[in-house]
Amino acid sequence: MTQQREKDPTITDVARASGVSIATVSRVLNGHPSVAPELAERVLAAAKEISYRPNGAGRALRRQRSDLLAAIVPDVRNPFFVRLLEAFEKVANAEGYSVVLCNTREEPARERASIETVIAHRVSGVLIAAASPKPSHLRPFDRAGIPVITVDRTVAGFGGDSIAVDNRMIGHLAADHLLEQGRFSPMVLNHTTDISPMREREEGFRAAMAAAGHPVPDARVFSLPFHEDRPAEVARLIAATDADAIFAATNTLTGEAFSALRSQGRAIGPEVGLVGVDDDRWNLMVEPQVTVVEQPSEELGRWAGQLLATRARGGQMTNARIILDPVLKPRASSLRTDGGVVVI
Image 1: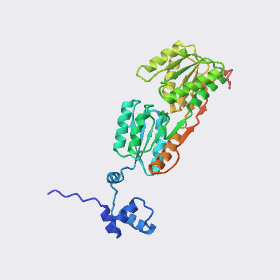
Image 2: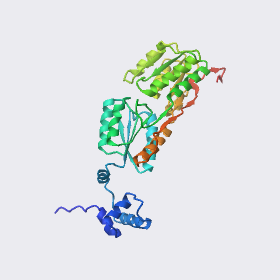
Image 3: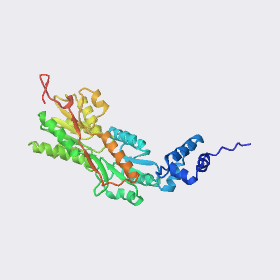
Image 4: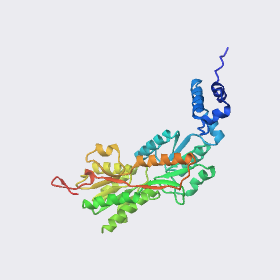
């Protein structure tokens, strides 16, 4: 004979155990402030005693929202997004939310599918680093009444909360540093100018070089979307150039440029300077260590978590536009030496 599985405790059981109405239990479990503290304590104690666990799915259906926040990002392998998401999730968890992650791989079609999925799961809010700059991709959130915050990337015409880094400053910092080292003929390795951070970094770099009287010609600026053969393409471009420095606008391109210079026997630092974007462990494990312009990715994640949790709870505030400053971390890969003395 098959033994019948014991039924999980219900809200009715909590009401019976605590000697109050089901309505009172419901108010306590949903954090309603109208319940007297001593009564709320009695209900919670009874719920704990009988091992009552709220039905999250049922609660989501009743109030049309789950205790989930969604993060939709283009590359979960990128250390920048890894650090951002860790900080975001830590804040979300502290605010009582779990986080569901979607990886779009920079594909607008996958982004649209991810948006449909998180809306179907009745998430309470969405963080998105948009693969597409088109505002139409975000309109389904408006129709569903779900708050959304954009991070890292600009979406034209989007009027909601956004948090980003001053990407033009990233380019300016890299250019100013190379100019201080007497490097006046750099090349630029970029991912694609279709994405706002990449475009703005390139614009900032070229503007700073031009302002100093050393404009970067188009022939030394390269747009290189990722593909399997890109490292070899980067190596060919570096081998063919007479540039005295390289500004790599992403951390992946920084690594590809470093490997190419090393394999070609070029002296990184004394012969060819290298400045990248975003720090990673390998930047400090190689010789020479790599100069980078660092984005405050963890701070981005914390701000996003705090803002989105506030929106998800129905908090009323004006739309936030937060721009954070990057920081230059100079190291040997970009520094000239003269008799062992670094020229700064």
